[in-house]
Amino acid sequence: MKISPASPGARIVALGEYQPANIVTNADLAARVDTSDEWIQSRVGIRERRVAGPEESVVDMAVIAGGKALAAGGLAPEDIDLVIVATCTQEDQIPNASASVAARLGIPSPGAFDVNAACAGFCYALGVANDAVRAGSARNVLVVGAEKLSQWIDWTDRTTCVIFADGAGAAVVSASEEPGIGPVVWGSSGERADKIYMRENKYLYQEGQAVFRWTTTELYPVALEALERAGVAPEELTAFVPHQANLRIVESIARKLGAPQALVARDIVTAGNTSSASVPLALSRMIGRGELPSGSTVLTMGYGAGLAYAAQVLRVP
Image 1 (cartoon, rainbow, N blue to C red):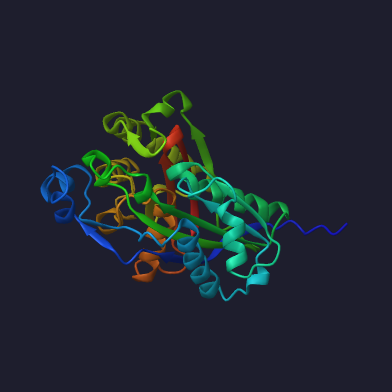
Image 2 (image 1 turned 30 degrees about the vertical axis):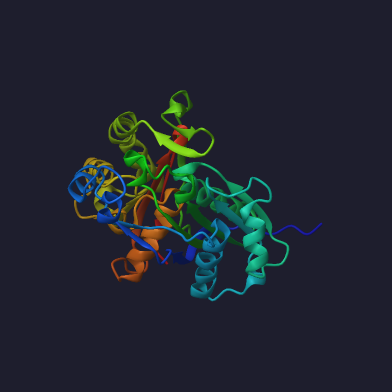
């Protein structure tokens, strides 16, 4: 029996991203439903979002983001032995997205499974990848968050069509001598799972005020616990990259961290809410703009339907 050695640590070695070309502005939506640019920006902070074309699938977007991450990390497909795709909008339940993504990237016979923790999905998948590498179950893991929320939205419902969007973000997690990903702090509030759900088995619906109260009053202790478990003080934090649910939620949690020096991701302004894709997408874009030097200490956090949440500290590659 061949057993891979356990690793003292795991780290993200590269990231990749993908956004559809089609930009939908607030003015575009105002022409279709009873809303306005002022109404949307004052409530959720979004100016525009990307929407995939009918020919683009969740797997298509995941493949592009994953391929970019592999290239950025200088890794060949055969170097990857586990693929995890976080998504809640896969077009079909079977087959899973991860095996298809692996095959299209030329990754030979990896472990492959999907994670559905909605908007917390990427952080859940990253936690699993970290544990798998450190336990010796894998050496290099491709983790992708990919969503096509536009196909699950009622485009006549102004409470949801102004928020959600499409895209993908990916990270390669590899074994390392020093830990580069902190312990994941995760949990759920399943007794309130009915606050975000599928309506008529085809439309995403949420009770916005209830979700807003939950995120702005109950989640910042999760972020602080993730910092504590990683041994990082708030004043040592370089950036905070939470799920891009709503700009008011992002800024409310950020204020409560006690880390005024930390750069806060506000990707939602131009990307919208891309569920499990939002954290890796925002992080990749911040790195691409040169805002986060290599080695920067970043706190990530996802939260959403379930109601599930997860947070961890990581070092930027």
